[in-house]
Amino acid sequence: MDGHEVLRTAPYHCDFNAIELVCASAKKCYNDNIGRDGYGADKTIAMWNEALGQCDAEFWNHCVNHAEKNINDWYEREKILDVSVNHIVINITMDNSDSSSNNSDSG
Image 1 (cartoon, rainbow, N blue to C red):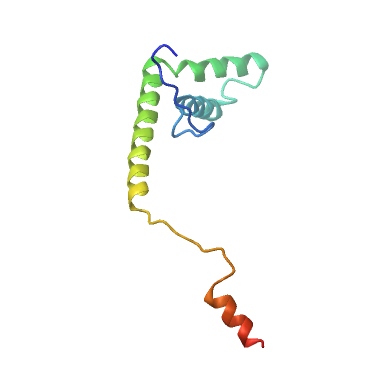
Image 2: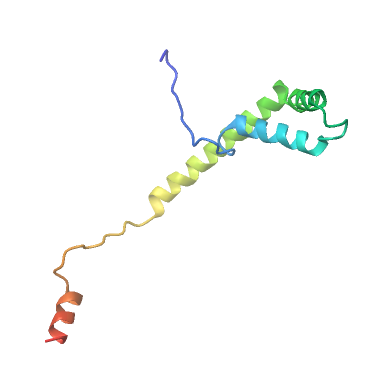
């Protein structure tokens, strides 16, 4: 892919997806101001345009940086968890002392 690496993150996970942060901000702006100028179709479209207009390049850059920071923070935590979590081994065979002692008690 021309020297690019694709990183796929969980869909709709706003902490890792900048577009989810932008959409949430636009929805909040819209919801906070809905009905301010009326409820007609043209007023609704104008309100959405105003909400989306607040999501300029600087705001997008802030959201991308925030998402990248969250990804890096989670990656560092995950590395620590991989090292610090002990492995759990569960024996699933029927030959164990508990089952044999239970069988001998019923006898």
